[in-house]
Amino acid sequence: MSPVERRLLAAACLTTTLVPISSTMIAVALPDVRDDFGLSVAAAVWLVSSYLVVTAASQPVAGSLGDRLGRHRLVVFGIVGFGAASILGAAAPTFEIAVAARCIQAVCGALALVNAAATVRTVLPAERRGRAFGLIGASATLSAAAGPPVGGIAVAAAGWRGTFLAVLPLVALALITVLRWLPAGEPDGAREAARSRFDVVGSVLLLGTLSLSAVLVNQLAAERPATLLVGLAAAATALAFLFARQERAHPQPVLDLGVLRVRAVAAAGVAIGASNLAQYLVLLAVPLLIEGHTSSAGAGVILAPMLVGSGIFAPIGGRLADRYGRRAPAMGGCVVLAVAMGGMVPLDLHENVVLTAVLLGLAGMGLGLSTSAIVTAGAEALPAAQAGVAAGVSSSSRYLGSILGTSLLAVLVDSGTGRPVFAVAAAAAVVAALAAAAFVQDRPVR
Image (tube, rainbow, N blue to C red; front, side, top):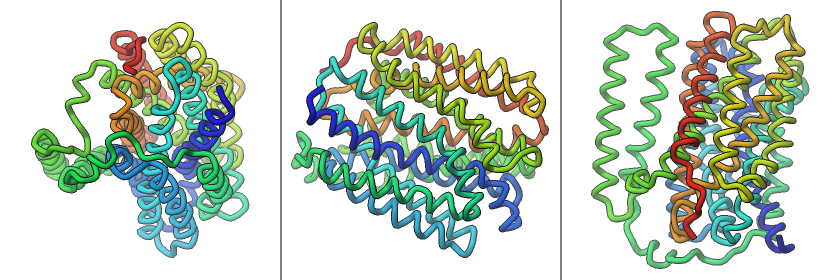
């Protein structure tokens, strides 16, 4: 890579870290949040779920806006807004304000993350994209896995509010690198796109569909009346139908559902969503499962092997994808993840710490190998002019998996053992492997 490309990639990687680390850092703080505000587990989880729902709904909007208005300015705006929302969250006097701050973080993080990735897609040639997205994937996976250890330290130092403050140095560093190194040019077709009408109705319907779906799954843990659950399901289905009809009719849809007919786009979305569901279940469930046996910092240490494994193998997965094609590392990494999750099903986490660490490291290895190949395949499945749309679809799929995993969390940890958690995570990894094996393309669209 040239020096210019390396600097661009450094800026994109730093920007990418903001959303995942803030998403998982709160995991080790959930017991403190629950106790501080007198909440149930299902209610406290909304500090995570709301963030993921809004992030997923904002991803395609962010990509579309970047294609229309220019990516550099939206990356800068997103980073600055993310920092401001973090300060608001740290000072929040009520749980509701803390959730609102998380939602603002999510919107701003989506603007920054998607448009930084789309810039890399348009600037780098195909023969170097696998390595580039491998490093970006490593940044996302590393930051997601680093969230619990860093969060444990932050909680020990400043309580759950420390998880909002801990991200501020990273915000400052990302802003400096983006201002200096991210290209400020206007994307191809931006002027024509800017003159078209933006799909506001579609954006609202997408947010409503995702929100109601998350509420529905979350309420299963609260043992609500069947009539309420049926009503929520019907409302979510109706909104999904209205959203699909709106997107087919609008000339500039917020999420072009037509791109899901591209096999590589749909397959990459399924694979990244399923593998992320497995990852988030583990990252969020472990601190709750071992509560009372160790501190928040201790929970972070137990999860640390996933950080090491993913960090080492994400760049390797990217290089393998460039050399051998996208399918093999994508499928192989998902199989490794499935084996690791399956191995954890019968374990007692308190009595098998060493084996737990080994299997978490293996899971991180699988995530590292697969994620970069899957993300690269999804990003290059569409022409460069649609880079923002491709990045938005890929990122949305990632967070849809996270939303489902987070919403299932309260249901799965109620048993008091990790068996349901790791069984679901293993099944999700198998789904990801099948999607990668059957559909993920090896030849990019230039």
